[in-house]
Structure formats: structure tokens, C-alpha cells
Image (tube, rainbow, N blue to C red; front, side, top):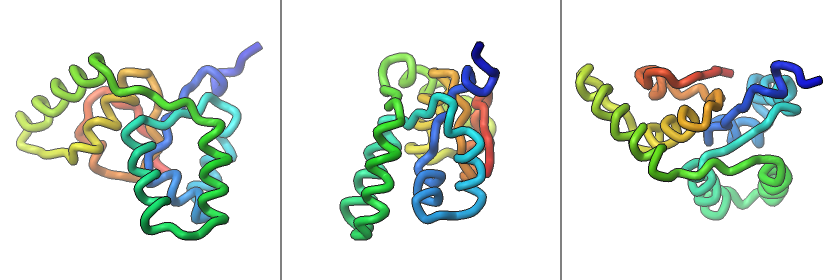
Length: 136
């Protein structure tokens, strides 16, 4: 029998993964709570993490931790549905007189389209209507 947590899909934002790899208490606590649920990452976050780990991060232990975590994550693609969602959301946000970073827009549209709860502490997602968020 599946529990509600197992049916809940979580999408890990870049900032969450970085703080998890750095051993930040709040990120570690949330990860321990959700680690048995389906975990995902967007293709956008995946590229950003690659850039961070290959450029700035030379800590082999962190790179190894990321590689182990990456094996457990489903990568959510960014395709036509996600692009349509991003376009509609950007228009709605701009109509409110607000702005959103392009990476946040693409990550949020992907998580929303795939029905995943986005784990983040980035306030940039607050204006993203219909996106399920969980702060840590």
C-alpha cells in the first residue's frame, strides 16, 4: 500500500541541492523527511548544478555526494507543455507588475507541469500561481 508521501513527487531546486551538499541543517532535515518519495530535478537545474560543480566546486567529496544523489533523481524534461506554461506564467506575472528570473520561470513551469512540489527557499517563486512550494 502506498502512503501519501510516496505518491507525492518532489522537485529539488538548485539552491536546495547545494545546501544539502553543504550539510545545511534545514535542507538535511527536509531531505530526510522526503527521501523515500519520488524525487526529481528539472533539466534546467541539472545544467545549473553541472556548471556549479565543474567550475566553482573543486571539492571532490561534494561532487561524489552529488553524483550519488543524481542517480536517485528523475530529470524532468522541458518541452512544449512546459514552454506554454512558462509563457502564460510570465505574462501573468508581468501583468501584476512583477518580474521573475528566467531560470526560476523555467524551473517553476517544469515542476508545475509535472505536478511536483518544488523544494526551495527562493522567494522568486512566490508570484508563480498554482505552483506547489515547500520551503526549508
